[in-house]
Length: 373
Image (tube, rainbow, N blue to C red; front, side, top):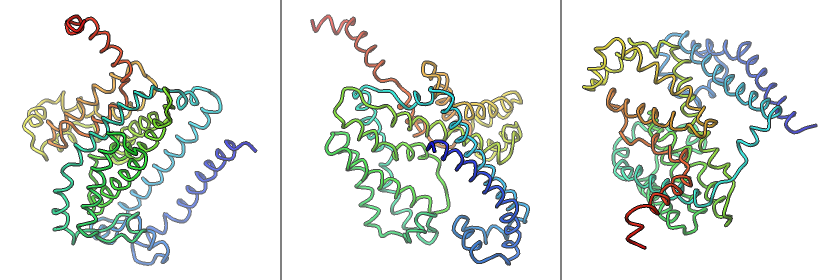
């Protein structure tokens, strides 16, 4: 039997089984665990995936947790439906294969690798100072799922320092093309370890989300670059672009799943502005038109950003609003930084080969070129 057909039926079967299991059994278990009568295995599962449940149930009623559980199933259904849709598209069209296949100049990959790891050095430089801060807050440490499974307790200071030095040293080695692949793997492991450590204080910082996704794929791009050919497979860059686009898409969907289109209302927008008290934001809040328009544009931007994967010659339509979107969160809500990593990873949507060609043309016709001749 065709492997794709097996995969397709596997996805459909898992889709049906999860929904049947949830609506006919697991949903009732939520009520049982809320009143303290659930099965041991289900209690352990909830403790693993939702460690704050015992604290949260003192604050919220049963309907709140049923709603949250429904949201998890909705997200699962959306993800599986997208995968099934892509599978069906792949069977009917060769365009999806072309989406992954193709080549880029090795020089293009060289530029991306150097710029990216320079960015890692820039964005991670403050992590060394954060080590002392988190050590002083060790009482609040509660390992996230993977750390809990691996039984990683609060690490000694020297381990955090070694992980930090590994990120910096690996980035430098990659920039200077010294054993780049092994160092890209070591750097990724250290980076993910640091992110897991940060998240173990029950606060998810979305600042490094896209940077983390790119970090996971970079060893594949480095490996592809090291093949020594003039042109290399573009699939690692395409995968990075897909991760970034999906990060925006799911950010928009999360807003819809959580609060519907009410998130984009002027009342909600003003609530966020009054909460953060940014001067420019307070001025914008005085306008009914802008208070209504801006959140709707933000939601539209996040939901439509994935189209950048297909409109290669019109990417500026998404990149420019993206820069404005993130700068808006800084000036209107006082959240994030002007040069956020979310903007930085836009480098993977830039055709550096075309820019280099245009630069050469400009240089060859410039006064500097004439003097050189």
